[in-house]
Length: 355
Length: 248
Image (tube, rainbow over all chains, first blue to last red; front, side):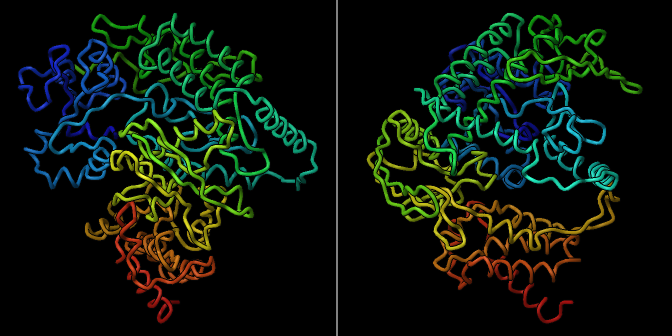
């Protein structure tokens, strides 16, 4: 569900472990509005990393709701009483409808059940100030680049970055590049084209010829679960090291045992997916490597070793005030870390507090 | 729950297609229709058969990629829903379902349930844009938009371009889609400079692509996952007529 729902919804779980009563039967004094309790100043509007971690924590304690125990209530009862159904409809009607479609439950009468899920990857491709990547003439715009969001994401950042890059930056920078660059006509007989074409064809053939036993989806799920467990809402050096040992093993298995049916000459969704999942191994490994190298907690990157006595993210700006720009040095080779120092002139990073 | 599926299988645009019977077993009623298809596909891959091709992307009902006919109805039996948001609890154990791709001359089959909807892109390219100075932020209060107009425009902008309207229309008309796009921009002050040109260009492109004409059947509105109203078609006709008579 969209994060915007937290504007009017209140998040809670039962105070008692294993309380299986229907939400409406749990009296208010037996509910734990844990975000409001822990962060009275911000309540349900704490940033998503804080809200997610706390939701995970209460579920890990055994107070999660729903059949799986992986859920917390997002309750609109008081907002509905305060504002009326018409106002809630106008603000969130489409989301309420979506929730009803997915769950078969009516969020106007029973609270929604939500749980954090991975949504986007933070960071992105390195670009310069004009949004050009390390490949001359290749611009990376919107969320695919790393420029506007770092260790945390905020609501609607996808829209924000699409607009900022497309509306304000590119009209000035890409035009300048096109106007000041000489372009020779490149034919498909060009050596560079030929070599990339051969590479793509070889990769396609390789995937089709493996003819293993496991579907692309099964590898995708296994990889996703690994990253979710070790490089998710809470990370430890030990867990990340485990993931870094397991991902290459799984990748090796992938390139030996994946089953991609059909051929490479026409529309083949399994083949397309196989190429992507092949890339996800590189990305997953890089994320774990980066999370292990950054021995501090910062935004959504929460290293369990680095927390304040109250369990909040403990930053270490003296050592980690830089962007980690990892340089790809070919599949199977360790990437090189380039540190881009972050310089703050007016507003300085500080320990966050939402109390 | 267990279901019987009859799925249109077609290797590519040139190959003949046919319905093939599959069994979907042990389906959890909380699954979406696409998750159910993934289960069937996993079974096919295990048997060494090519999985059923179908388009999908966001699985949130907002991107417009998914869609096919279920028992003759675009996006299936639930109103205001894409197939990715259609859940198996709406079906009964033992149901027999016929899955077919969108059928329209302008949407050639690519493979199985996936069709080529680039005709929609060409309609958008013909006029679905506004000219606006980029590079810096305009003064926020310089263009006033009445609330009712903003709401109507937003309702039209909800169109995700899935193509259900075309697939369900006995004429294969794209009037609901084109009308939604013309309304979305034409209702706003920012859309006025190209309003006449846009109406003509998009309607002309729609006709060129081989879509049929609207005869006010209303099937499009009934299956639209975003509940776009056919009043957008009336607005498209009005804008077209006005542009043809008095436009520049």
